[in-house]
Image (tube, rainbow, N blue to C red; front, side):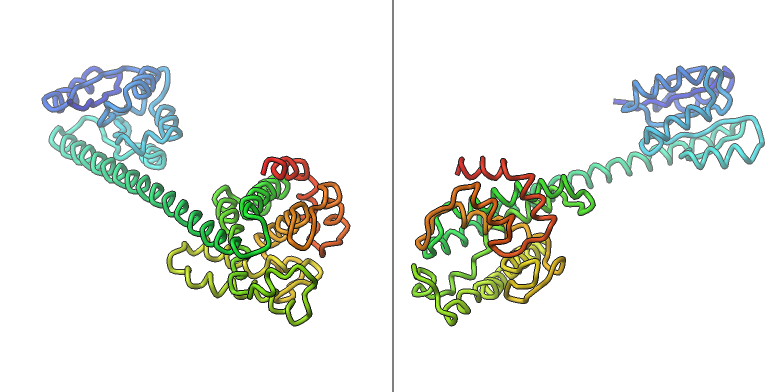
Length: 354
């Protein structure tokens, strides 16, 4: 299918000359005013290979037409050659600043016009192919990225399930923590837009939340499954699940994307840190604790309260809510508590459903 050269010129002599130059190789469309030019370009953009645009068209000037075409990014897809009988340098400055590829002075030298025009058409065609290639590659990369994310999620879920097989938590603990984390993160995004939490970052955090207790795989059963109160020595061993988890996670570093590994590490190591610095393993205070860990820290505690464990019966949701808000489970940052307050009904509904 032949491409079209659009000639916008109120002077019949000028348009006829351009028509004679290109009619053997291209379909020709001739228009005589700016409004008709704009309408034709918008209707037939995909068919047009080149536009000759007279600077002094009636009804709407070439300047006005070019301004609109630039605003619609059409100048990036179709080469535009401005034609004018005037010698004003200002015309060239304005035309080039708005995306025109050339400014031709009337009367034309046919051989020069044809050579420049054909080169521009070929250049834009090549650029279009490159853009199509880039878009196709981007599409493939997005598909691969999506597949990798699914792989990461299944991998992390699988590892966390192995931990659950030998821990006192219920088999649905990971699913609930992931659900609670997603709710809290989305509420945080709404309440604190300055944090600039993206959809992708929330997905990464939700995946990471699944392995917050991965280090428990290294804790002896005699401690992990003990229904009674732990001794101080046993408690220290249990607390080491945060750092042990990071050691396990480091073995998976090469098969995770950098951001996923970073967030997973933060969640694994710091989900028992507390706002007042009385958490572990590093005694971080306030905003020293990464946001990812602050969110998972609360969701982990909330699930522990409302779920049955071998050492306790579940608390009712109202009691669990007030225990957290009153600081009975350690201190959480004000922003996290604010989100917890606003997310309360959503969390309770998700808990009831799971």
